[in-house]
Length: 286
Image 1 (cartoon, rainbow, N blue to C red):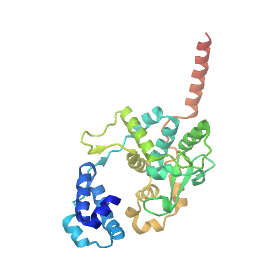
Image 2 (image 1 turned 90 degrees about the vertical axis):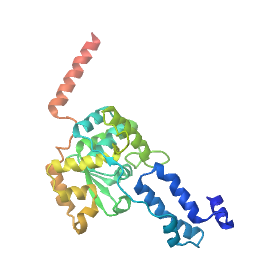
Image 3 (image 1 turned 30 degrees about the vertical axis):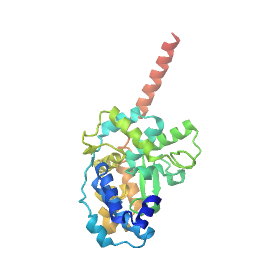
Image 4 (image 1 turned 90 degrees about the horizontal axis):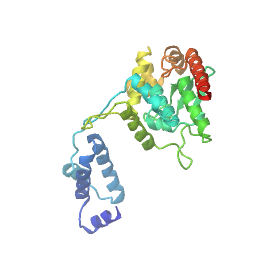
């Protein structure tokens, strides 16, 4: 960067030629919307670094390219999520379940702390999402089923986790999203969910956000409550300022707390598992 600025200052090149080359270099490897975002950063960068910069000339020599959705994020079916939960390691299982029941974005999920969990007497949890940690910049809540809370606590107990973050990474921080992105890709492939060859349709961590919204609707929650929980402020409009979270929580408990359980942990099943465990123990002795 220093060399580029020096070349501009001595007249070997100019900001418009540098900007055009940068955009041409990244165009083959990035989506149109990402390209548009990077282009929007350049005027501010040159104005702050060099001062003498013409936005009119920049728009003429580096015109904005059309933006469109180049990738469609596919939503996994419920039975595929169940398969993935059975195959996943404890850490990945806890994060996968949290994403699938709460509708949180991956960054919102990984940055949660123990203090953000309000665990109710019946075992489920209300999760607080502060305005500064959300994309839409407003306070909201989402919910984790008792099954999901159990997954999280079992993982933390088994690994002896002491960090304030639910899913800690290195150097006193939370787990990096790239780690989970790679783990999710492997899980998708193991259950037969593959991206399209041209990458026009893909499966990613954001796919679980879509799946969570679909399941909340299938359980009987109103569209307004679903949008509030998963954080679509734009779709809510002015209603986002008048949300009754106690009423939303009661509605979620009534319609979703049990229906959004993925694995069968019922008493009859647990009894059967215990019986099979005893039988296997006797066989091993023989």
